[in-house]
Length: 270
Image (cartoon, rainbow, N blue to C red; front, side):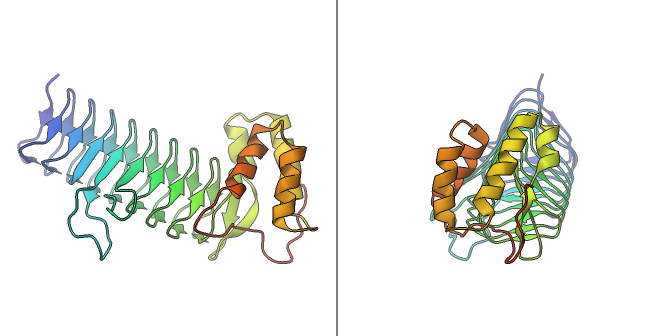
């Protein structure tokens, strides 16, 4: 099926449109853009730069993808944006290109849902099945794991890592790395327990959740340093892939600190 292009849309020479692509009224598609099969630009969408949009992704009015990174050092270098398949990208979403002094590419995975006003900055890597609620935004170089949920109007600092299956609460400002399976809350976000509701919805077993609860208590309870507690958890929970994911996340080096419970907060069997 040939692409379906509204007569008011502007498709620059060099753009590549696969079978079944729909480009609605007043859209602009740049010369280096590739739209895979079944992509739909509803109307008033701008896709620019060296940007590839994966199959069956649907983009709603006034979204802007592939614009220059919002960085004072950027001087027009050849950088890119890669958007995966089956994403829903709602109104006024912005996703920028990478930078030559970062990864050179911004990446959004598959099956993500970006609600109105969400923002993904330069050089970010966002996994699969991620939800950005309205006006959630991540700064440059952020890494977001699979099945993460960012609450409405949440903001994530540059270079922060967010582990898989984690949740950033609405209106939270996250400035440190958030471990997998956890929730953070607050204007300077602090660790607030495990994302139990999300884990149950995604089919994690009762045993796996109970093990995560015990490990969370051991990792963030009192006694010894965090480094010692990490080593103990690595030995005590070697048979739990979920706990090992947390351990490896904590052991790997990032550019930010780790999001911890607030001082004086009593850690229980979350």
